[in-house]
Each structure stands twice: as structure tokens, then as C-alpha cells.
Image (cartoon, rainbow, N blue to C red; front, side, top):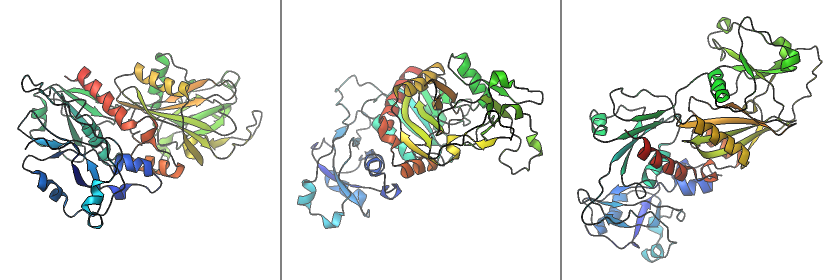
Length: 428
């Protein structure tokens, strides 16, 4: 099949339209309606292409470029790059109207010379967690890399489905990078450099950040013999589980009341059953409790969001005699979430990730002291389950607060670039 006219217009189905929340029109238009799709037309002819989409209800006109590849004489439809018009009913639009729909930009894989082709030399394996992210994120990243990275073959491997028997032997033929934002077992015999999150405790995270020279509120693991000096520590202390459970169990107490509790005696179905606790110096963030979360991937910012309580916290009487035990985590109360562009917050998060480059992703939690403006790191969520671009909780946050994580720092484009660089540098 010969190269077709780059201005040729095809009809393309939008199978994922229904997945878009109503008030995320920009995100849907760019990333969910318009999955950057790669279709093999090995046995198709020009006049047969539209028949591939027979039966789809919604269509949209797009511009494509079909270019010959250097292997197996295959021809592939290259992906779109920018948003295209709203889907239209194929049966209600004439051919003339389709020809005059707005144009769409697309990536075109550069033409290759007749001889001396550069064979694809790397494998990139992206591990997908179906209950934690939309697979469309990875498919979009994969297709974004087709033009800029012809030397990298990208594979999406789901933790919900065992790979084919010949998958890892096939990967072993070339240098491979395995990327998983959350912990997952990989065949020890499989070839490839691993970038896989490894969950550690909050206390271990605190120690790693302190060893790297970052400002972290002083913390102690609460044991049966722990005693905190109120004169040195301050009148209030944050007590939180040593393993994160989305803000549950994070309380503000009086320093004199900090003590060990045998959580093994709690009911087995209690969310804090068996947990150790950490005592951490309280940093006042202002009358409205506030915190920042920066998601980073391979050291690059993906999104930065500020969470601020919608109600003022009560006045804390440092000389009071009554026990104090109130929730203090920003994600445990009514809050407003807004995209944050504060340079020092973002720079702190990326600097932390640069100091721990073995981790594929981080969800860096940062607070700013109200009195001094100084930033403190709290944790970086080493478990890796911070892919809230398309997680259920992340979609809920974006919908409820009218924000878009994808668009802030061009998330998927940034990820594609980072993965391209990492694969070329680290694949083994």
C-alpha cells in the first residue's frame, strides 16, 4: 500500500466518550475522546479503512498521515496530537460537511531512508493497575512515543492478566526497562532494569528525607518508653500511623498526652488495628489547615495541588488542661483543592525526587509554616499509589473541584518524554 495523501480524511470512532465526567470537557476532549490510536492497516486499502469502524455510533473527522514503515511492509495510521471537533453522527453528516470539518494536527513518524535503517533497540514495559488508573493513560503515552522514539517498543502489561508465555523471553532479546508506579512482583529471571516503587514506612521516609538534607518536622516512633519534652517539642504533636491510610488516624494531641497504645487489642476490622504510630512536631499552617501534594514521575512534576480546609480550625489553648484529639490531615476534612503553581513548592518536590532517583513516582506532601513561610516535607508516599490522574479518587477530586491534573504541566506529554529518556539511559 502506497503512502496516501496526508490531508486524507477518515472517520474515527470515540469508544471512550462515556467515561468523561461532565465538567471535565477540556480533559475529555484532549485525552479521553482522543486516544492517540495506532491501527495496523497491513491488509487494508484506502477505500476499506472506514469500514473498520462499522457499527460505532459516534464519529469524528480527523486528518491522518499514512506512511510506510521499514519492517514487514506494514502501514500504520499515526496518532493525533491535538483536540479535534466534537463527535458527530456519521449518518447525519454529508461527505461535503465532513471534508470541511476543522483540521487536526498529528505526529508523523519521520520518513526513513531506503537503506541503513535504525532498528528499534529498546523495550519499555509499563505495568498497569486496572483498579488504580485508566489504561488509556499508558496507551496514549505509548502512542506519543511512536514518532519521537522509533527506537523504543512500548508494551503495556496488566497486573490483572498473566503475560503470554513467550513475553519475557521476547523482551530478553533487547535491552528493557520495566516501569511500575506501584509495587509488583516481576519474574526475577526477566531481563531489564526495574523502576518499581517499594513501599517503606513513614518513619523510613522521614529518615531518607533528613539524610538527603531536607527540612522535615522532627519525628519519633512511638514506643512504650517514649517521653516527649513539651518544653523542647512544643505543646502540640501530630500523631499518625507509620503506614499511610489516606489521612485516617492523623490527629493533633497535646504533647504531654503522647503515649504508646497497643493497637493489637483493637477489633480486627478496625482501620488502625496492628498499626505503629509516629509522633511528629506540629507545624502551624494557618487558621485554615493546608497542605500541598506534588506528583512527580522520574523527577518531573506531573501536577501540583493545594488542599485547604474550608473551615477554620478551633483555637488551640496551649495551656489548656482538657485532652486534645482532633483530625489534622487536610484530606480528612472538608477542603477546597486548587492547582498550585508556587515555584518553591514544585522545586522542593522535584529536588527530593532527584535525590532518590530509584523511585519511579512520588506523591510529595509539603506544608508551609504560617509564621515563617518555611516549607517542610512530610512524606513522599513510597507505595506509589499516587496516580490520581485517572484513579477513581483522583477523578472525583478533579470533578468536585473543577480542576484538571492532565493539563497543568501537560502530564502525558511530560511522562512520554521522561520515559523516553529513562529507557535510553537505563534499559539493560
